Length: 448
Image 1 (cartoon, rainbow, N blue to C red):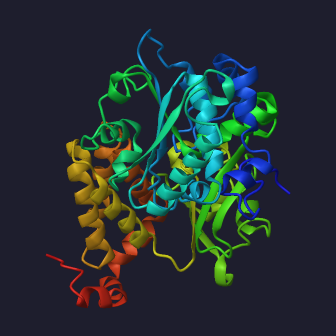
Image 2: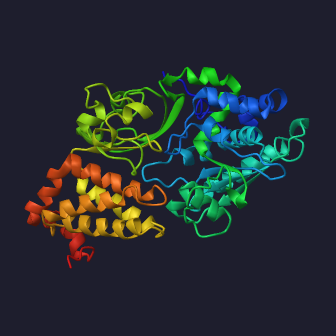
Image 3: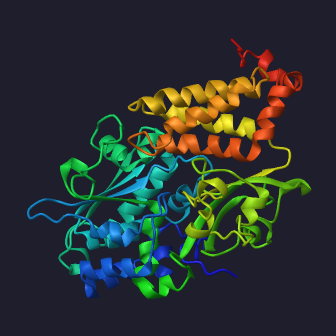
């Protein structure tokens, strides 16, 4: 049985309330940090833990904290990125819904470490139930003396505010989030300066994901070195995975880093295999923004080694034969799924969510959607596949923020690994049109 650090008490009735969370050892990390550790001590433990950002980039959290500028007389801020909107990812929503005090405790510990006295939790606007739950948890923690002035008599002051987002995927990018938090349109900023120097209101700011902040609680409680003993290589600790698609048991799982992808998919402890007795066709391992892998590369690397759920193993082979951990949005496709249709679905999303600042992304995502739409509905020709490849290549690496890359990578990997499906749509147009007749007849398809 895998060790659980974040979800150990998730099934305890009432764990979302302060009293039950406290009975299960909640807020011990706050007591330990504020009463017996300096802010630098907490930062050092996070560095020792090897914790990497759980929102997608995987950047070492302690190192990121170490970059925070500390000018005299200037406030510092911690901002929690709860704008979870990566297709296939729902583990942060799960945490905020069922164990919100874990996030609040992590916010207090992390704010103390960074010298922040005002912190923000930015939550996607559509998540109104989660916004209310987290606001209630903050009120409970404040009533119990864990927030506000002179917390636990230590002289440390902290206020946490919840800010609903506007429902834009682009605000998951940290600088666009800061723009939105300031009341501006959520457009990514050109860097440098980085948020650690000039972030919220032009002040030094750290932006961390919900899961990353929650993970600081077991790190402070048990010590960074203990946390680092879990996992392998530079992938330490546990990771929350949002498992969806054609699985027997989709849901949120906490795994120890180093679990093989095959075991995660097929073992009874986790997903229980592919639904309806079908075979696995492909896997999206880290949310819609990472390359899709066919079965043989999902279960084993190009070197023939088992593919592990770690940053290093998933990335083995680069984006030619590998993928990325991303946000942990794990989607399994069975043998009946159409890769072209799913790629079109992803591309439509990125086109819709592009902020429009950068022309490669603004125009390119629209072009990709149109070409994929044409191929999927049986009106494409062979040159369209090469056109798609050229478009994604001109988007990748040519935008201010990673949304352009996120839109390009699924298209590139789909063509690289499943080109024959694209060709089938083109060589068998009548079959493609017949399969999609219902959608065409409803006016969804306009070949012109």
